Structures are given as C-alpha cells and as structure tokens.
Length: 151
Image (cartoon, rainbow, N blue to C red; front, side, top):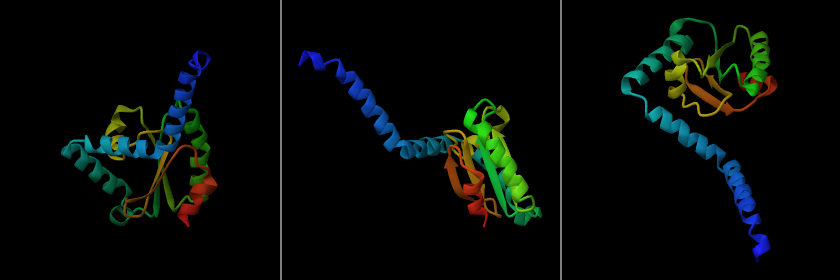
C-alpha cells in the first residue's frame, strides 16, 4: 500500500483537470454572469446606451446587418490568430458585418467587458441588426465557421 501513496496526488491532479474540462462551460457561464451582476446600474445603462448607439443599425442608420465583436488582447497568441479571421470577415462581408476588436486589457473597455461578462479570451460575440447578441464563442474560431452565422 505504501508504494501507491505517491500516485494519489497524481490521480487527484488528473481528476481535477478532467473536472475542469467537463465543467468548463458551466464555470465560464457562472463567472460571466457574476461579472455582469456586479456592475452598477449606472454603468450598465451607459454600456447599454453605447451598444444601442453604435450597433443598433435600425436606429443609427448604418447599413450593417451584423456586428462581430472580438474580445481579446494584443499579447494573447490565440487572439493574434483571430486577427487574420477578422480581416477575412471584413473582406468577405464589407457592407454586411461591422468587425470590432475590443482589447480587454484597456481600462476604457472595462465596462463593456463586464457588460458582456467576458471571462476568457478570445471571445467572439455576434450581434444582430438591433444590437442583440445571438451567438457567442470562446477560443479560436475560423472565418468559415463564423461566416456560416452571417447567411
């Protein structure tokens, strides 16, 4: 029995990683919800007004049908990979999709990051013509996979 004691921590660490993988989405949703709930009513209203002003194309008269919000950081490898995806979406759908990069490290973006509950980067959020979220993904997502959402 003594010779197996050394394996107990290894087994526990493996079990922890398995649990993290299995419950990743639930943890991210919990953290996202917590971030949004901690916002003050005033900050929430400011961001809601900003989103409506910028991304509700029915009200602001811009001709886009969708908004592609890319939340990331300039120091993140997966986020850098998404730069090419954003450029491809811009060139494929120049008049249809408004592509916006939001640096989560910028203090000026803290409110919008909290509003959308961004817990991991990169995170892509797609908004419809009225500025309402209809799709969310965390991690790298190819331009082909995103393009499907715009048809």
